[in-house]
Length: 276
Ligand SMILES: Nc1ncnc2c1ncn2[C@@H]1O[C@H](COP(=O)(O)OP(=O)(O)OP(=O)(O)O)[C@@H](O)[C@H]1O
Figure: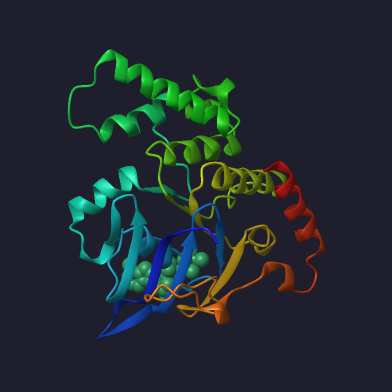
């Protein structure tokens, strides 16, 4: 079994709501492993974005643990300062937001370079700059847009912008990749291609990918799938207890859990596996 990268344990998150509090996440347990893609689905307002925000350290939960396993040890994101979390998101956690928020004046390769340079608090010499450019070009190649490296966002299609967005999130070599609705602005075919790309990158780069999608067809192509309803995970893929034991009662074997009308989903899944 692959090694654990992210472990959420009994995570509860509330927001102010009038005189009271609204529970967005309710005692959520979730484990995400290296080289595996976990997809979260759920109705609107069920807590999917809140789950991603907590998993990536953008929001601190009211209670629970969010453990990030990385080289050199395990960190509880709930105990880190804002500055430490910002630094961590440059190196260990890649985030792909729903809208590819690319900088309008920069070319595709510059979008990736500037991300890397922002993380360096010192002057960067020509050799290091060449290394950064080479890595940026390699990543654009890996996501299939090497030939658009010098194009600005207004010259890229929606699918190409999303691919640059994904490549940018990988610049820091993150162990955890958090992806919010990557296909929402794409048609079915381009959406399926982006899902296949994420599955391939997850396996090739040995990343742990946690993805939110409203599209059950796309979710069915993931290694694991869970659903959030009213802030609770209805099934919990491969949850590892804090004592290190795997809680098999919550393990979801996708091969045995297909629901009705998913023949097409199985076809997409087969395509994804072939393209890996
Ligand atoms: N900043 C906030 N302040 C107050 N309530 C919030 C805030 N953000 C989200 N909520 C509420 O928390 C609940 C979960 O919201 P969340 O955005 O996580 O759901 P979601 O599943 O991502 O929804 P969608 O699919 O519509 O994006 C909702 O009831 C929402 O109204």
